[in-house]
Length: 356
Image (cartoon, rainbow, N blue to C red; front, side, top):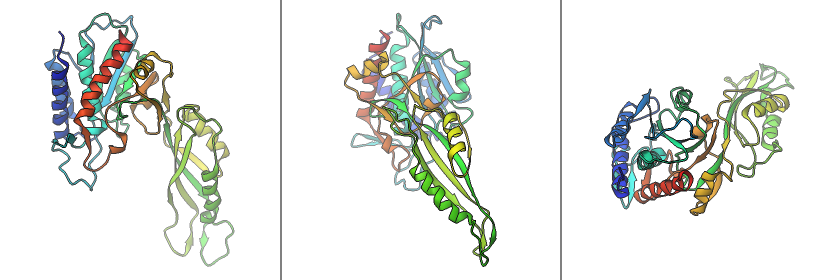
């Protein structure tokens, strides 16, 4: 059954309005999961559900073919205090659809869902398609795409829907957060102490500021290491035994998170403990046919410094979607209606060039 593309766009925008109106903080996406299932079911598409992860397979799924995953998330962060509009009241002003999650990543999600509906019943595609609308992306939760992937068939390549202005993020930095400890000798402030942990931290902070990892990525540039938190002492007359630091490390695709952790634990002038090593960098070959299809349509490629569910994938993947990343998590979040409509058109054109 061929579905009119304009009708598909209207239904996608209507779905996004519905999603905005339903609070869906990470771990609380039951209502939006129901709405997504209803959307697909209305097109005669059978859905599966694990927790609040909703997924579906194209009609002519063939286990002998490679598989393309279309993925975006339907959870949101909580609205910040600077909102001047009701975050759960979807409304359009001057071509902008306002509401929490409209840009991150509702516009991407409904555009991918519309794209999946477009290709759902087509025969002769060179890849299977799995559509997965997943939860708990914002907090990288245990019931996110990480829980879903083990029960899905092997994924060969993926499009992760995040706002990129419909340019192709062909690489994404990983993340390792370290708890670091600078040690010293505790003492009364009135007594001499040449091993003051706070003074020792000065050289350590300078080391973090100046240290460079030697491998530089063509797409992602250098590994970026930033001290983001510092804490020490609780009394004016006591020299503390240690200074606690938090170090945020954005990892390029030249290193694994394990390699970064091993290096820093060896060379850093303080104790360093990684909180997690699971948020690895991700990338796709710039010469992959999926990338070529996008480039042929005039889309740019770039490396993304921000994290997404790509970090959970082990296959090649590209981050791609309507909307602008700079609007994500901002007050009075919005996405242009034109961006959604163009996003659906471009997703379909890119996949036509890849799947057919």
